[in-house]
Amino acid sequence: MSNILITGVGSYLPSNIITNKELPENLNTSDEWIKKRTGIKQRYLVSEGEFTSTMAIAASKKALQNANIDSKEIDLIIVATTTPDQTFPATAVKVQSELNINIGPAFDIQAVCAGFIYALNVGSSLLKTSNFSKALIIGSESFSKILDWSDRSTCVLFGDGAGAVILEKSNKYSEWGILSSNFYSNGKFSDILYTDGGPSLNSNVGHVRMNGKEVFKHAVEKLSSCLLEAINDANLKIQDIDFLVPHQANLRIIESLSKKLGLPIEKIINTIDIHANTSAASIPLALNSAIERNKIRNGDIIALNAIGGGLSWGASVIKYGKPD
Ligand code: ACO
Image (tube, rainbow, N blue to C red; front, side, top):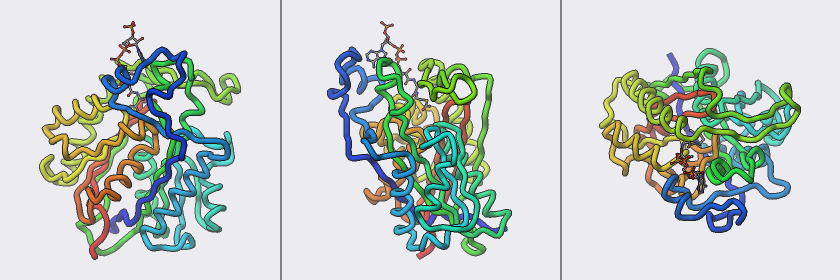
């Protein structure tokens, strides 16, 4: 059985940074409230001419460069996004076209904040069962476009950005790459995090609505259970994890996870302070940031986990990179 390596990571952030203090005055919020309840200090927001597709393309180019491969070698593209440029076509085909790739499928996956884990699972499964050899897996979001900027309980939490990884099929190095993964949904909880619009509902894209306390409760419980399952499936123990790269939703969720799992906080990558919650982009953005800071290195055992609207959640355990 072939295994799937992660051989390149890249990301893109808009240049427009909005600190907590720069949020609209009429929100009646404060830097102190946001930092204390969430850990967020700032977020990046798209400007005119920046879209989910353009951020996805920029992140992909960096991932290709870091993997040292040509875009022509890619035969599968998946974009995880809840904020596509248009209802259709898929954002993934725009990436395909811009990178001059003419073969293979390109499609979007929508699992909100769990989207990147979903795309990773679907992409690695497809590589294993097809003659494709290399995939581009992207999380890209212009989440600011679906926020109600008069609702302080949601709009302060999110930001925009994109991250991408290159997956390569290998018949060697069986100890490397994606060691285990899982993903779940439970639609019974679809009413605690959703948008109040959509093409078939009322033709508006709608705005994010959330019962924050309920989401928090499910997040800690489900992020722990799927992660422990993935670690067990990889025949590892929590102590074997060099770094956890969780979905960046809230510092308090990250701290609760650390306590519940007995995983030291230093082993958990935290970029919520600078990126805020970028939904499907948050894991590849945090991963790329940790690699650029030389925190995560070739050969490290990393774990990823995420939860989002649906509810949808999942985790993966990976030996990152490939033998030198
Ligand atoms: N600024 C100031 N006050 C605020 C703000 C704000 N931005 N937002 C809410 N408040 C007020 C509320 O109105 C409320 O006031 P009241 O007591 O007068 O009624 C008070 O603060 C407390 O509100 P709560 O909702 O109880 O605050 P809580 O401690 O639960 O924190 C938060 C809210 C941060 C959303 C928290 O519930 C949370 O993090 N939940 C997880 C949800 C999450 O991370 N969602 C992201 C998307 S889902 C995902 O990515 C997993």
